[in-house]
Image (cartoon, rainbow, N blue to C red; front, side, top):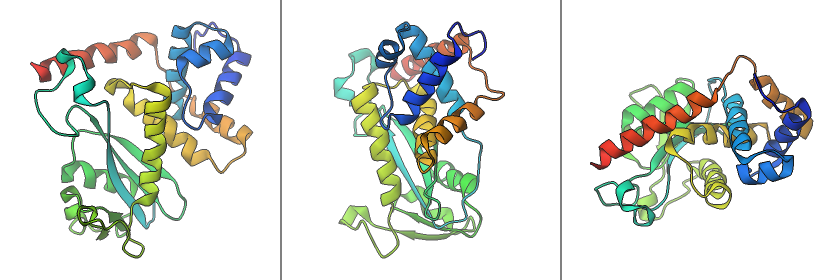
Length: 249
């Protein structure tokens, strides 16, 4: 809220709207609801998402681990934005996540790829050694046992989605909410800002069992010692666009 020209009451209303909008809220709707400019609403939303970024924590397990692809279809993009390759996930960002079965809490972040370094690394950052990890058959999870975890997988390629307690339905439910927000509320999310949007959906999911006033309090507490200037916010977009142009060249 540093240097904000908006009063505390406007911020409180914004926190309430964000925490009670299951699929997120667009800057256009927020600017209409609060009577502020759209640009100011967009900046406010990103500052609130920055406050929602969670500290790292470990799950005791069992945990579900899964990944998803976020982004529009290549055929729907302008020619200069298309990647020179084919395939469903081409040009999309990858988000990896881990869900704790006992608490229903989820951790997730944008990753560079689906190699074992990225996927097993995500598990190591959020699950205790020795925990049971439940995944699909993606090859990136194969080194989990060598990394000190118990591991069971379901084979989606042959139509197997549940094998006893082995499934990733909880993570897939979280991905479903994230993508409903993407397609139904935001329509497009810039890759350089995706981590903040993921943090927003994580925070709402993990705080969902609490009363609304407590959910709002958790967001306000997250503001402590966090700062996002407008210059830094838009600078990330400039660097990302240059990177995308280099990849497409």
